[in-house]
Length: 308
Image (cartoon, rainbow, N blue to C red; front, side, top):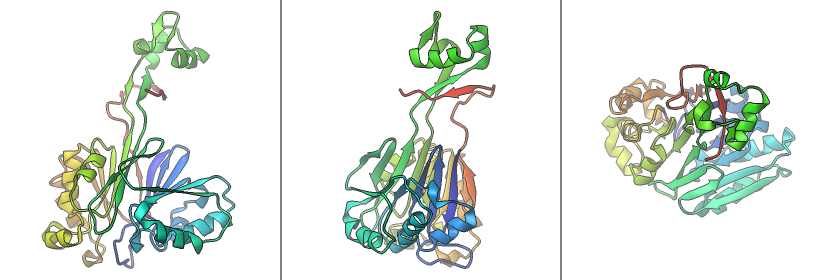
């Protein structure tokens, strides 16, 4: 199961229909919680999300609408008896704020702190890039290793079935049949998370080749002056980010309260510049599945993950 559960879509000021930020990425056996703003614990209840699903928490920066929900989430995990390690990633300059938030949460969680201060890989497949905001801010990209997709008709023609498929996967050849004879390359999926930032190289790097790109869209194009002043993206700039990076699905979020609940204008402005990417202006509690892998065959196939 790979899907994004949107827990909140408001920026600095929540509204009656939009909570502060919060996004849970369900990625196979992991649950990555991004930017839990105030009220995230309650939004998880509404969304039917269990705190036990969370394995990593990723903060882009320490402005309150992106992290004030952290103590409640951590306390709920203790209450629910979470006994697996939980990894918390955040900008190193936010160390004081993060430790203060952790200090007021209920003790008893195996919480492991991972500050970062430069671009790079912070966990297996999880990378960060610096963004351009008013304080130190990083976006995140999760990348799946490339693999192979087995084609059942070719497997059948080669007389390979059952345990022999696994053996072929492990050994690369069996009875003169190689992997390339019965499978095709399977590109790894990419998820990118770009919050509070002006246009910058880091945002472009994160969006490049993303299957699902979550990008802030604080202001409409009509309020580009405000976006520049506060170092945020407009809807059109978010569309540019998706279009230039050939992203497949763009999820807009982090809306200013000045636009109320109707953000269809933002979706239109982003779509006009997204170069064919599917654009969704997110609502609270929405669930968004990752699209199928690029170039995935239409015929039925057995997917076997292989490291490069």
